[in-house]
Length: 447
Ligand code: GLN
Image (cartoon, rainbow, N blue to C red; front, side):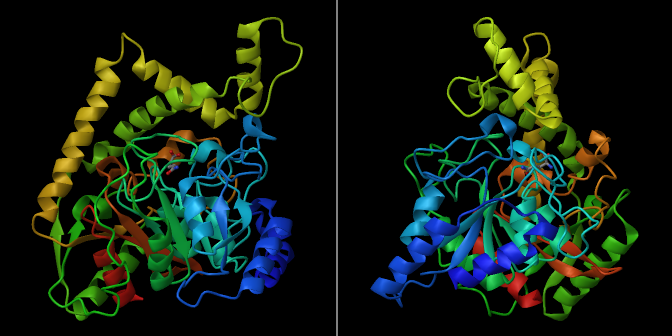
């Protein structure tokens, strides 16, 4: 299986560009070890290959988060999720391409190369988990891990017509995930089917003493409700998620899906999440502020790239960071440093935190009465490669439907609602904290 997966990867990779690193030798050795000892029948994932986003650190395997500044960095340890994958017999066959440091929504911010959409090579795959999504959609691998800080699992899953889950904040350890915005980052799962997504999330979930925000909450069997009917389940449609700026064809597909949920016995009603419209602004202040702090560690001394012909220590920092970081990463560092600075803190960072509280309260009100929220994942289907690269604001605005979930720490899945002009339309099901199994139940019922 590992051998044929590696063949699937290489035969399609020229066109897709989903990988920064294909891990042939170690993967085959691991597979041989498993062959020699025999598959453990009680371990569902024993011997199953998958891809991992390149911001998840892997012991002995170069990890760059698609940034020049980490070129050549070989981590001396595994992320907790990687340890968990290995414990359950899974085999990492490659490190997936991404937007540099997970900043972006199209995959085009990779310092190495863009990834292509698996349905149409002229379209973006979405981002930032671009490679993780295209690798699954193209059939290079069946599973992958990504990370979602403001939509980076759900939006590329939507653009590629696959299943992408961003779990509740705290469900999955962030130890060994290269930090972008620590209060928002969460690792999650890509797959072709809902049930397999639940099975993979089962492998990586759980409390980790190495991550202070990791949750002690009991981990249920995520597949336990798959196959149960959804009669009487209450699903909310937030009117703000179907408003201006959302493509008519996308809206129509998701409303048709809502009708289908109704025909399966769900009660579907319109609700309001009035502060949604401030989500993008709050996110880009909070996310960039946290990023500006987290990225201080890339100083040319401890990791990866170091500039040459240096005059003194400051020169080393300035040159390394100027040469090592890409445009978008620099933009975020500047934005974040500005909003955290003494004179502007109250006006920006503090205000954004207050907006975040309002957004959390909006969701809490709706979840007092409903089990799930249904909405489009992204305002459009996959757009043309190159078409938005010079317009960061347009790129940021496209995150309007995914960001509130991260600000509130909620779980959300994106699954395919159908197609428009041969491209997949994604919809998200958002749940209460720790209600992943209800999300999987409804997603499987639709599938
Ligand atoms: N597109 C968003 C951003 O650029 C989301 C990124 C993410 O979830 N990692 O910040």
